Structures are given as structure tokens and as C-alpha cells.
Image 1: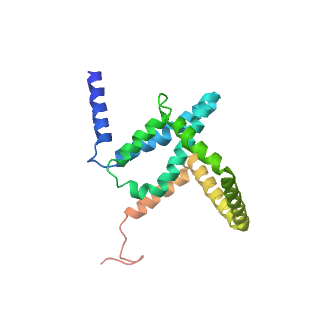
Image 2 (image 1 turned 90 degrees about the vertical axis):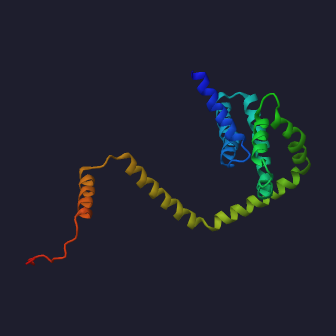
Image 3 (image 1 turned 180 degrees about the horizontal axis):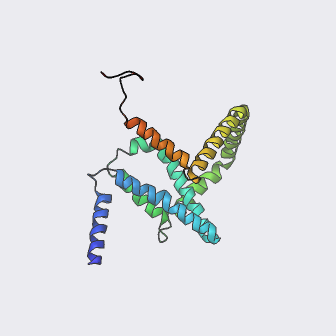
Length: 196
């Protein structure tokens, strides 16, 4: 009976994922899960295991995924209107990760690596200039950045204290008194006056 239930759940999930008439929310969530969440966990495991092959595989995946994401940023508004776009994207993200297909390795070896080797000098110059400009920008706003860091630190510290310390008796009594005051109807009569 449990086997039957799991087949029904799998079939319903697959129908939701592949339904072209349904909302793209399900397939977009699947793309995020398959394209980011699963690889993040795989990368964590590769780093912790210190296995060079797994780490290399993860680096190649992130290079392919990052390149795809960069292209998608500029084309998403146009391509997302193509019917079944997110379904194709989902299939592409699965293909990138599947060990039998080595999709990410193929993309890296055939497209990313040759392109970057050819343009490495130009890319390094542009990144160097951008880095210098970011340093200048950050340096010119040091005072503001320090103020924001102080404010965020105080907010974090206050929130941390509130979350870590249990409510005291005075906190509980002030909560109860404010509830009592809000439930007591206001009186129109001033103190010392009779209603008669």
C-alpha cells in the first residue's frame, strides 16, 4: 500500500512539474532547487571531504552555472515568454549535473575555457579597473559604512539579547497590564464626578 501511495505522489509531482498549462511557480522552484540548492550542498560535501575530484567537479559546475546565469540576466525577459522555457531550463540544469552526461564539463571545455583563454587579458584589465573603482567608492564612504555597521551591530545585539533571554516577571506583568488597559472601555466621566 505504501508503494502505491508513493507512486501517486510521484505522478502528481511529475504532472505538476511538467504541466505546460499550469503556473510556472512549480517549475521555477524546481529550477532553483536543482540549479542552486542541490549544488550548494554538493559543494559543501566536496569541500568537507577534501576530495579533489569532487571539488573540481563542483568548480566546473559553478563556472557553467554562473555563465548560464550571466547570459540569462540579459535574455530572461525575452526568453521567459517562450513556451516551456522553464521546463527546458530545468532539463538543462539537470543535464549540467548528471555524471553520465558531464554537461557542465562539456560546456566548460568547449565554450567557457576557450573564450576566457582568448579574452583573459582584456577581462583582467576590466576587472582590475572595476576593482580600483570599487576601492575608491568604498574609501569615499568609510564614515557612512562605519555608521551603518554600528547601527546593524546594535540592532543585531538587541535582537540577540531578546531572543536569548527569557521574559522576566516585569515583562510579563507589563504585557498583561497593557492588555488589561486595552480591553477596559474608556470612561466618559472624569474622576470625582457622579453619574447621577
